[in-house]
Each structure stands twice: as C-alpha cells, then as structure tokens.
Length: 178
Length: 211
Image (cartoon, rainbow over all chains, first blue to last red; front, side, top):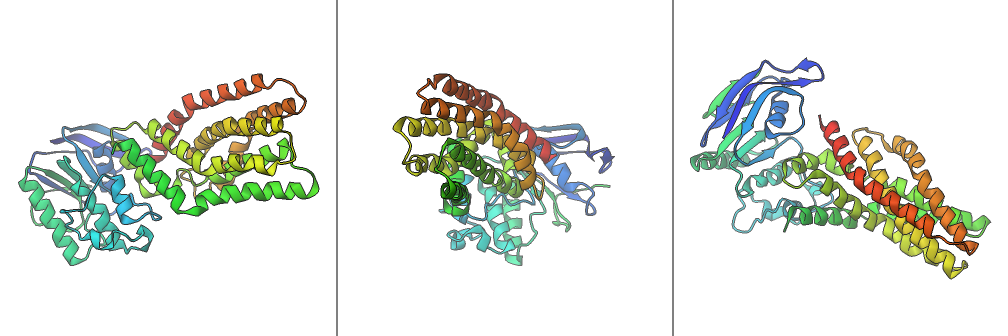
C-alpha cells in the first residue's frame, strides 16, 4: 500500500532527518515520532506527493486522504458549505457530531470544532490510506476517543494509517525521526 | 457533482457571501470616476484608469485565503489539473468583481455617444479578462508575502499598460469615427495569449511557493 525507501527531506540545503525506510501494508499503522521541527510534517507532505525537496523513493499504490495542520476550511463559509466542497454528506454518517453546528460559519467555531470538521474528511469514500498530521490536536477527550475508534475500524477493514503524533497510540508500529 | 463544479461553487459562495470581495473594487471604481467627474466630464481615459485600479484592488484576495487554509495542497492531490482550477478561479473572480464594473460603465458615461459607450464597454469587457489573467500571475507571485499588496500593485500596473493603451486607442478611434476592429482584434489576441500561459504560470508559482 505504501513503501518508503531511504527517504530524506530537505529545507533548502539542510537535511531535516536521517534517511528512513518503512512500508505499510493493508491494516497497518505507522506512527512517526520525533522532536518538534525534526521534519514529521514535511515527511508526510512528501509521502502524499506535495512538492518537497527530498531524496529516496515513495511508492503509494492506493488513494489517500491527508489531514494536515491547515484545516482547508474557508472562514466565511458555513461548515456544510465547506464539506460540500469535499463531496461529504453528513446524513447517516457523522461520528464527530458535526451536524449540530453545520450551519455556523467556520470563523464562529472553536479550534476543536474546526478539527472535528477537518477530520470529517476521513469519511471521503474509497480512501484506503489515511495520512494524519497530529490529528488529536485541539480535540477534547470524547473527540480523541472517536478518532481512535475510527482508526481501529479503518485498519480492521484493511485500511492503513500513517500519522505523526507526540503521544503513543498504544498500538501499531512506531518510527522515530532524528 | 464534478471536482470542477465543486471548485466553482465554493469560489462563487466565497465571493458572494462576503461582500467585501465584490463591493470593494466596485465602490473603488465608482469613487475614482466620481472624483474625476467633479472636475471634468467622464471620458475613456478616466474609465479605463479607474477600471485598471479596481482590478489591482480586487486581485489581492484572489488566491490568498486558499493558500493560507491549505486548499491548494488539497487540490494538488486531486486528479483535476491545477491550471484548470486556476482558470475557474479567474473566471469566477472576473464575473464577481469586473463584470459589475463593466455593467455600470454605460450608465456613468450617459453623455457620450452610443458608439463611444459601446466601444468602451466592449474594450473593457475584453481587456478586463486579460487584466484578470495577468493579475492572477502577480497575485500568485506575492501569495506568500504577508504584506504583498504594495508589491502586487507595483508589479501589475506595468503589465496592464498595453491593454490600457489598446483600450484607450479603440475609444478615441470610435470617438473620431475611425475603425476600431484592429484594436479589438489585438486585445482579443492578448486575451488568448494570456489564456495560454497565465493558468500554467500561476500553477507553477503556487507549487514553488508551497515548497
């Protein structure tokens, strides 16, 4: 599903971390760990195919969804209008209880609510690889539990997850960048 | 709904739900024209200069929100080619910010002849498309700068000069009962030229800015 060989990312001429190799098969979870600024987010951006200066190879054989720090939400639009842009319908599938505030403009939401809306993009159909950059940030304990449950359900259905997170999930593989 | 339709719908909603985007260039245009109207009658030069400045004012918001919110990263990962997205954004931006200016122009030039009014409206209609496309390139170049507005103005106004001269020439030709076809054809050629390279160039600049 995802294979990374000798991947190193660069900021200008500076190498951010030593080359890493890993692979994730269907049903697998890989958690990236490392200090702030070590390049976890940059590695994720590189893996999903965004323009990042790098060496090494990335082979991804499945469609993916990328949840980054930036929430992709336009502050002047309502939650529903933002979700329409991603082709997401909340009817019958709303694990983060977004429909309760779907008529509000994004600028009126708290950081946690914005993160819940952003994570709703995980419900886009046919995305078997989830790439998540600190997905638990700003979430309350309920939100964190919902996300953990979704991740477990996704891997049970042979989906894969690559995430950068400061706290251990307690399951899946870990890779420390240095 | 296709990806392109969703991009168009979102841009349309952003432009029409926040009146700052649509009203600012329109009111700016009317203000500049009104200032000149106090001292002299409104002529083609005033209308074109005001329209050109209105384009500069409107360009600052063209890509910035999408860049800051990460939407371009999302769009890069989608199958829809980014130049097509850019073209859709430019067209939406033109319809919501330049078209109102073009529509109101015949009314503020009420004392001119029908030929003059129709010529300047036609030249503005064609010219503003080229201005929007060229402005999109400059807007992309300044997208990552926190205070890019001034630089955008300095960079874009020289690029707009050929269209300004062609637009004014066609208006003066019409006022003197001379043929305007050559000027209009040249303006159309500029639009086609801008259409051929601006979306590609904007995409490239945005990708470079994202590194």
